[in-house]
Amino acid sequence: MVKIKNEGVLLVISSPSGTGKTTICKKLIEYDKNIHLSVSVTTRKKRKNEVEGKDYYFKTKKDFLNLKSENSFIEDAFVFENYYGTLKSEVLENLKNGIDVLIDIDWQGTRQITKAMKGKLIKIFLLPPSINELKKRLSKRNSDSIKEINFRMSRALQEIKHYDEYDYVLINDNLDKTFRDILKILETERLKLFRQTYLFDFVKKLNLI
Ligand code: 5GP
Image (cartoon, rainbow, N blue to C red; front, side):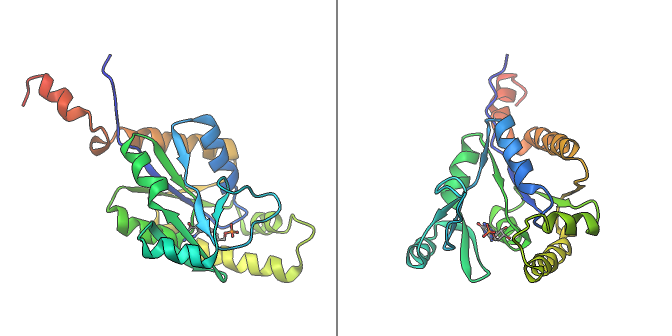
């Protein structure tokens, strides 16, 4: 049996909120221990159910800007009066060690990472099955005001406009099917030649070079 050591797959999943992205990301990391979900840094306040180091690294603006000046981010953005950034340390070392990295960010962050990672990024976009379904999902939380729901809806529509910047676009009308489709994408991408770094030595040993 050949011992395989690949370079990890870098996977971005974007979608408007209310499309099941968070659920799918959680399912992926539970199912496959070789996938790391990148934890972003943010300056926004921690919400009640959030855990430091699991949902985000919560930092002051000063600490965030220090990290930025130290060139610690692959990408960063100012979203709704808060800073967000993807740490190089969450991504690069893992990929080198053969661990797949999943990043859950919006189209703006995806554009920056595409540039930084020069063709190595696999981009998946999830669409809701319909606008009515999206509205229903965005209105689920009883505590939300109409104004809040409309705001989320207009953000969601803005995000959807960028679907064609992605490699794979999936309509998430069945969570299990979407999950299986993403696994298929991941498994295929793992087989790409540039990620199978062990192959060069392997072929050498076959005396073909
Ligand atoms: P929330 O504060 O609700 O968790 O996220 C607000 C927005 O920030 C979402 O659209 C989310 O995709 C985006 N976001 C979260 N982490 C990052 C990140 O590391 N970089 C960028 N560019 N956006 C992020």
